[in-house]
Image 1 (cartoon, one colour):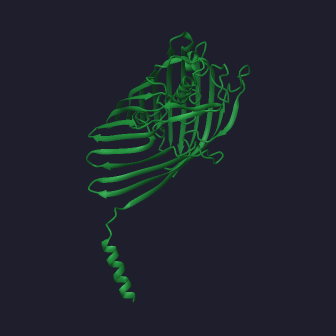
Image 2 (cartoon, rainbow, N blue to C red):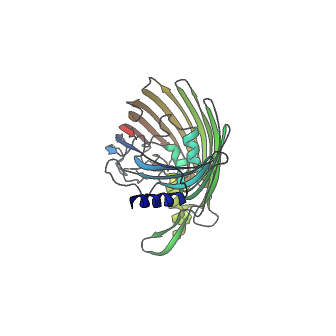
Image 3 (cartoon, rainbow, N blue to C red):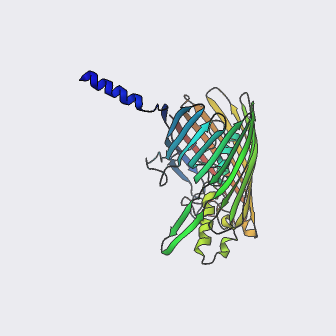
Amino acid sequence: MKVQLTLGMLAISASLPLYAQSTVQLYGIIDAAVRYTSNEGPLGNHGRSSTKMIPGGMSQSRIGFNVTEDLGGGLKVLANLEQRIESTTGSIVGAGYQQSWVGLQSSSWGRVTLGRQYNALFDLYTSTFASYPYSPYMEAFKPEIGMSVGARSNDLVKYVAELGKFRLSLQATWKGEGTTSVAGVPGTFSTGGKSRGGYLRWADGGWAVGGGYLERDFGTSGKKLKAYAFGGSYRTGPWYLNAAYAENKHNLDGQANCGTSVQCNIDYSTLSSLWAGTVNGGFSGAAFTAANKRQMVTVGVGYQLTPQLNWGTHYWYAKQSGRTNIANGKAHFVSSVLDYAFSKRTDAYFGVDYTKLNGDHVSLSDSSGAANGAKSRTGVTVGIRHRF
């Protein structure tokens, strides 16, 4: 009886197709820091400072899964799920996964991925002229991310091909972000979200140079945000140098002209989330939504002081303008960070940053995100990060 059962199982096994080998990798980052910032008080008393623990000074804390299945013949299936975590409370960031995509990769023709993932400009920033060589940007102070059109998109189709020393990436969103509702107002309203764009990158030795373009629709027909960036970096011995230029421009008519149009105000709310004025510490106040154009120049330097100690300093100059003088404003951002690596996975960091705004209608924000009239701010961040 045992022999018959064994033979039967072997027969069933022989009739099944051979399955490719699949691997699942668990990864993550846990980052927590203490941050001091000046001029975080409310309007009329903005001189009040703030010291608090934040859920990530250099990186957003996260946990994720990378899945790879080798189909043979140079073809692989790839998938990723990633969720952001508030390390200070253990709570989940957002309503769902921050990345959620699946795709195919060929050794001959490149990779296609579909789902929620990073857009072309964010990929260009982090791969070609990142602010710091050991971390693409500083989570607590990241002016450049406000120029990358939201960093991630839903319903995104992305193609990436490695062509010798060149990398070509193309993207388009299938449907976009979708719709939203407003409390007390019947119906749903479009947030737009369809986009198209890409970037081209060249790298050789210590050099990396690239440029990219991304265009995103808003809810109202014909309204668009157009963004591009180009720049490069160079690594030689202990030195890391980088520089870039970025520009965002939209054709909305001005929020002051929205009147009672709910859709018009939602368009500006969407723009606000993409330009991330409160995240990068500047361009709040009346000028924030009056502007039609933003420009930014960045330059940075890093130096490996010892095998464990890395120093980097970065400067950003930003300017915005619009149809009226209310929109005009300038900003200077500087950050300097010392990072000490205890091991390949654990590091501690100390960073100092400074923001200076120029313009009658630009303002920093208080701790709630409301404009408080302040024109300068100093930040000090001390934290520890572990990657697994």
